[in-house]
Image 1 (cartoon, protein in one colour):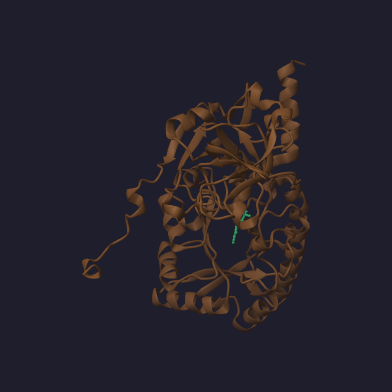
Image 2: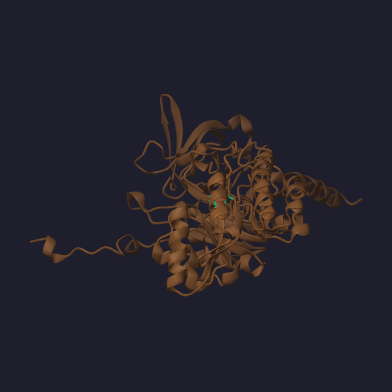
Length: 456
Ligand SMILES: Cc1ncc(COP(=O)(O)O)c(C=O)c1O
C-alpha cells in the first residue's frame, strides 16, 4: 500500500470517528475539517490563511466550503432511510453565500424572524422548504411568512396560535403549523442553550398541547396541524435526551392517532454537538442509528434543523497580535478581535482552540511556549477570547486563528465600542472569495440622525 494511501485511510477512519465534530484538539495538524497546518502554515483547504489576512486584514472570518457541505451531506447520508428535509438553522450563520450554497445542495432553512425570512428568500430558498420558530413572532412577521407561503410555523404558545389563525383568516389562507413541544427533558448542555425543560420559555407543555388538539382537532380555524416540533437545546453530545424527547412526543402522536387525529410531520430540531476542546460528540451516523429506530415506528416525515453541526467547525476567526503585555501575575496577548466579533467565550464561557497562523520552529517547540490569556481590545473584563493557553511568544503583527467560530460567531457580532464588524471570506479549494466586506466607519453612523431641533 502506498504511504499516502495509508495516511488518507487513517484520516478517513478518524474522520468517521469524529464526523462533523471537527478538530482533534490534541494535534491540529490532523484536524477532521479543512483547516490544517502544513509546513508551519495554517491552510484553509488549499489556501494559506496568512495570505487571506494579508489581503483582507484582520479580524476576518474564514470558512471552508468543503467542510460545511461535507457536514451537510454526512447528515443527509446518515438519515437516508427517512429522507428528511434538512433545514439549516440560519441563526447559526446567516451569510447569504453560505445559505445559497446549502440551499443549492437541497437544504431548507430554519428561520426565527422576518429578517431571516428576508435572507432566506434572498438566498433563493423555496418557500416550501422554510420553517419558522420563535417565541415572539410579531403580527407583521406572521403576515409576511403567510404571504411567502412558508412550509410551516413552529408555534410556541397558544396566544401565538390564535394570532397566526387570525392573520390567516384575514389573508384568506390556511396556515400550516407544528406545535413546538417542550418535552421537559434535560439536554445536559450549557444552561443558556438548554431549551426543552419545564422552566424554559420555549414551546408548549405536552399536556397543554394534547388538551388543545383534543378540544380543537387538527384543523383549527384557518390553521392546519402538520405535526410537532422539538428543539431541546444546543451542543448536545449524546443521543439519550433526543430519544427521551422522541418517546414523549411519540406517545402523544399514538394517543392522538387513536382518536383519529392525523400527525404527518415531526421536526426534531437541531442541537447536535461538535468538538471545541475534548468533547466526544456522537457522529451523524451514530446519532441516526440511535434515533431512527425510535422514529420509524411513528410513521412520520422528518425535519432536522442543524446549525452548529454544519458550520461550527467550518469557520475560524483570524486575528492579529497588537501587544504582548506582562503584569506580575499574568501574560496577555492583546489581539485585534474581541467579544464584539466573537461573543461565545464571554457569553457562555465557551472554549475555542487558538492556533498560530504561522508556527515556525522558533514558535513551535512546546518548551518555548508559555501560558497567555488572549484578550481583545473591548473595555470589558469579560473580553477574553482564550484563557491560560500555552502559546509561543508571538509578537506584534503575528496572527492567531480561533477555531470553531463558524456557528454563532459573526451572527452575534456587534458594533460595541465603535467597532466595525469583520469581513468574511469563503474558501473553495485553491480559491478564496470575499463574501462580506468589513464594515466602514460610515456604517457606524449610517442609520443615525441628529435633528437640528436638538441643538438649539
Ligand atoms: C428552534 C431551533 N432550531 C435549531 C437550532 C439550531 O441549533 P444548533 O445550532 O445547536 O444545531 C436552534 C438554535 O438555537 C433553535 O432554536
